[in-house]
Amino acid sequence: MIRDITIGQYIPGDSLIHKSDPRTKIILTFLMMIFIFLVNTYWGYLFLSIFTALTIVSADIPFKFVLKGIKPILFIVIFAGVINMFTIGGTPIFELGFLKMTYEGVDTAIKMSIRLFLLIISASLLTYTTTPIALTDGIEKLMGPLKKIKVPVHEIAMMMTIALRFIPTLLEETDKIIKAQSSRGADFDSGNMIQRAKSFIPVLIPLFISAFRRADELATAMEARCYRGSEGRTRMKQLSFTKYDFIISVITVAFIVWVMVMQSMVW
Amino acid sequence: MSINIEDLSYTYSNGGPFEKIALHDINININDGEFIGIIGHTGSGKSTLIQHLNGILKPTKGRVIINGIDTKQRDLKELRRQVGIVFQYPEHQLFEDTVKKDISFGLQKLGLEEEEIQQRVISALHSVGLDESLLEKSPFELSGGQKRRVAIAGVVAMMPKILVLDEPTAGLDPKGRDEIFGYIKKLHADYNMTIILVSHSMEDIAKLAQRVIVMNQGTVFMDKRSQEVYTQPEELEKIGLSAPQITYLMKKLKTIMPDINENIFTVGAAVDELRKHLRS
Image (cartoon, rainbow over all chains, first blue to last red; front, side, top):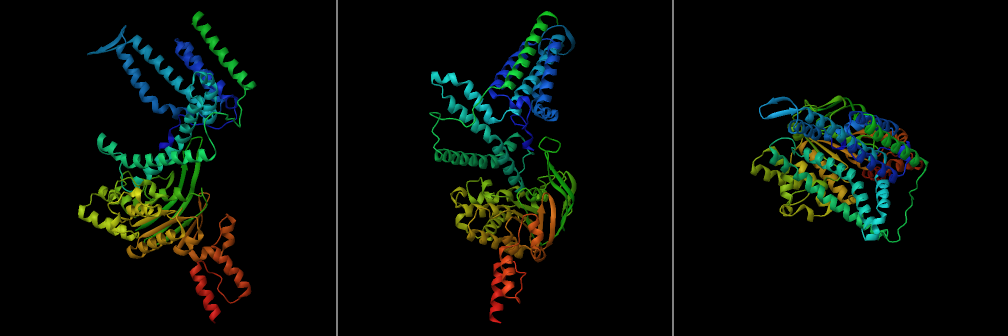
């Protein structure tokens, strides 16, 4: 049940994208996300969607999995879309009392929904193809220059690594506790909002206790291995750019430039 | 009145990239009052199987019927009253501020009267060898073994007809382990509860269970009376398990003492047999 959440999950693979350096992937993902906001024609969205689909195929991620990942945000997108349809002024399609649907509204709603989906998909593609450890390594390296102005980059990256590392563990733990409490007669699905919120107390308390216990144990284990922050710390796996990074960067940048040119001159 | 498992198959994240077949075509019938041991390696499907007994997991294929209740139905209250499951490390599910409140959690949900709850809490506490002095204490002040017992009492207080325990003694010292097994045995004898004990220790299962189900890679590898399982250690060794150590010792001793009975599965029985042999 709770394990169905797929956002942020890593899917092991051996594709070009999997093999690229996390720094390249982070930068390209950011570029794509900015680019998604710059595109404003339907042709642009069409090619953007095709490009995203091809990326998914080349990364060997099952489509079913991607669809499952966007399911949780479906409601938000539809909700925002409907609000847009009725609140943006312009040429009316029909009026129903105080509700007025406009062509401009529908246009914005569709574009916005496509944008949101593409944003979520490209962000999840990054995590689908990059292990959490590689991801935070990449972030740490990219933020490296900030060390000069006393930003604790390593500590931030370590906190992120640990947080990411414990998401699946805590989910599993939650699952286990829910099972145990419902075997004892706990009921999570009936009653009003307040009763339901209350019914999660038997889950939350054990979960907090175990999270603190784990944090304690982890801290002890790290100290036992002489961890003392970033100072003088070296890494086993050095990040390095390879030909794969060159290939995916060239493809992505070429695509972005092509769409931008076409958008301003042809479409 | 019994447990019928028919053609049960279960697949985790069915259809997803991490699809994993956990159970495959399981058929088991369990009668009232039986003491069953389920044994198998990590990943053999033991835990998945027991979660089907109170409807936490629903069969991907096949069905599970407990005392006439199909676990696929929506309302599981009655089912969960009849089947109590003690999961691994049950002390991790304690949450109330007093032992008493924690044990009565399930009873409150059943909507019982205050007096009856009080009575049941105390008798559950006794049945796991604890006394009333703990009632008002916080479960978090107790020792590991006591926490474990309080958690088991929380399930026992519901007076289930079927009590399932998943590795109830994992991480306990030998004394704590023997005590808990003693109480489980007593529950079985006193209330004629059906007990299903999951373990990967052959010694423990041999000491307690009347019937043993051996799981291997999601299937039932063997389902026999206790004695029959251990008389063929070769079969168990095929899947990487083994008979209790004492059985191997008795087989060795047989080569120098040809008249002893080699089909012995517990240390207690071995002591009796050897004493008998040495006296004669």
